[in-house]
Image 1 (cartoon, rainbow, N blue to C red):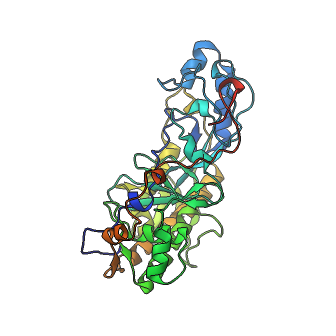
Image 2: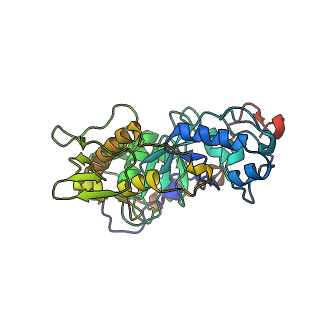
Image 3: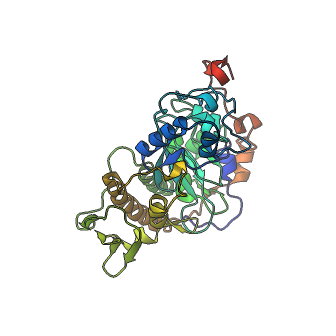
Length: 385
């Protein structure tokens, strides 16, 4: 990341002032890497009755089968109490379950202890969520187009309203940067620079050097593309692309990396070449590839809904693994290039205070009022929130 020789760099909490604590599910079974399994879990829950349904649900203080909650914003889930619920499973949606690991989630408010409705209200195909990691080795921030479930850090949407309206930036920041850099600057540029420049203490050195800004935002936009994985699929150059060299077994149990051969072993299955940078890639001190594999192969407790899962390793998981290896290798390359940037001429927090950008008004730290329609409340009642 860009080096800096002072302590007056603006804080992320001031540059992107509205933040939300991450959602808390309270139970693991409503999410998983396989959408069909989630629908089967829902069906099993609703087929059970009385105490059996209660045990399968895994109640907490926040959610039981008798909890009365409203509809999850933007989702079709029901609002009758789960103790007497019937009907098909709400269509699972894609979420970011862990860094670089996309899962599916049953989007039903009755299944989620703390859903953070304010995040769901601004989630659309133009939104970018920024999630803080837990520190340690690896990226300080993760960006995603999906609703993030990452804990424990705060989540900052880039936009405060749907359709990319009202950027979640300190009021006046864009105008000040445009004036100082003498070039157009949009919200995604600020986020791109932030991903490139952010320090472990969540301070973000800002440069007033147009050339450095251009190089930094170029790297940041590449990080955004790799982390969001939308549009064209990332590819390593020919000769470096990972392939399945030996078929994966129906249910692999062990993962091993051969550094000399650059080969990833899933029992007797083999994938290569796998660059060492992809295998070594960590977030918060946890190796991403190992965590990804463990999430899909760890034995759940028998008799629970989480135990309903694919009988064999799906082909889609192999495709996702190949893409993940590619993304991690390319992201590691960008991280190396970030270390070459040095901020010498800077825009300090003191300068932003002098320009009236700081302190940030308290209204910018609270969610915007985005509701222009009624949301269904408990038991089908309508209420404007």
